[in-house]
Image 1 (cartoon, rainbow, N blue to C red):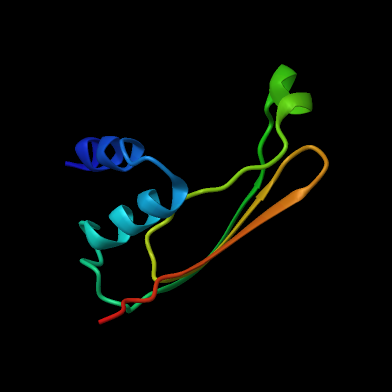
Image 2: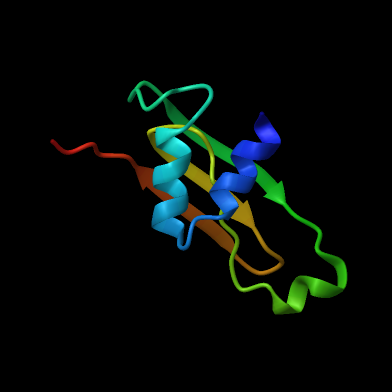
Length: 86
C-alpha cells in the first residue's frame, strides 16, 4: 500500500499536485486537518553529489508542516499549509 501511494505521488506532474495528492489520499490523515509537523532530519551526506545539490525538500504527511533539511552549505526550509476551499 505504501509503495503504490508513493508511486502515485511521483506520478503527479508538479510539486503542488504532489502535495495535494498526498494530503487527499493519505492513508493516515485522510484529508482531515489535524496535524502539525516540524521535522529536522539533519545534514545529509551526499558524497560526490554534494556540489551539485542546490536544495532539498521532503513531502511529509500533515496539514501544517515545516520540514528542515541541510545540504553541505545551506539549510532548506519547506513550509506547507493545506487549505481546503468550498
